[in-house]
Image (cartoon, rainbow over all chains, first blue to last red; front, side, top):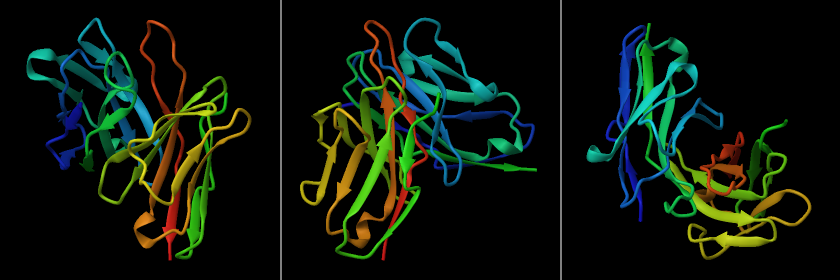
Length: 115
Length: 116
């Protein structure tokens, strides 16, 4: 069964600094990968997704992620963080293409932005 | 095009009562997931439904929990005889399947269930 690991439970960055959130997956074939963001009391919003092709994918709000098969990773990055980026970020794998019929989520990374 | 609609947004139930959570998928979507999120935890898969069919209920507790997605109307997650441990946020996501393409799941705002 596939699994997702987000090693960092909490991350604090200063506004304007760069950001990288780590995500590692365990899965035998090429997975479908996703990053979602959740603000307090809200639902999940899709930031970006990887299905195939170019391993560097661009998403909304200035985020990007890079799929590295050799490292089984799909880290999320942003060059300059804004205070409004403070939220919880979830990496997920699945939703077909051999990845099973469900989305499997990591435990999330809580991002705090210092002004 | 309205997104995934969940209601109610907040639900308070006394121990032993029934909780009924509703999810209206995005227009044209015939597949629905239900997830549960406990405080300080990630999202745990509960059930995958297609209209009139349960595809995967491997994440559903064996007792007190049931889900349906009828031909007409919203998907319903039903929790009978609620206990304090059922207090959580419950999220619904809908999607459609396109042959040969990847897809994405769209999430609702969730229903926050509090059992008192």
